[in-house]
Image: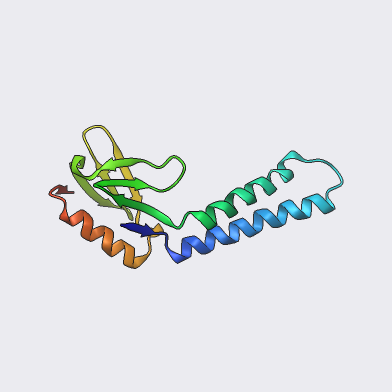
Length: 127
């Protein structure tokens, strides 16, 4: 099961990508001095463009493992989850050793219903 990013979040990412690329391109043509911070916008824009094209899913649930789909995203076995807390617009999943935060605002509405159903199937304590 794949949990999608919300449309609002995807639009924000697209505008951020366009902004970084535009600043990087304009700095190449109109900058008289070499400011390193201005030239960092071009690689930042290219990285965010790659991320916008390739990363459409916030979470992936496969073979009993919940994985956040970004560079340093966490993985957690669904069988190890001890408690789930719904607080301040996010789910906080806890095991004996770790915890994972899932931002509800970044999830598409239909995917959020699927995630909620999947979490309710688990025999864990909701706080």
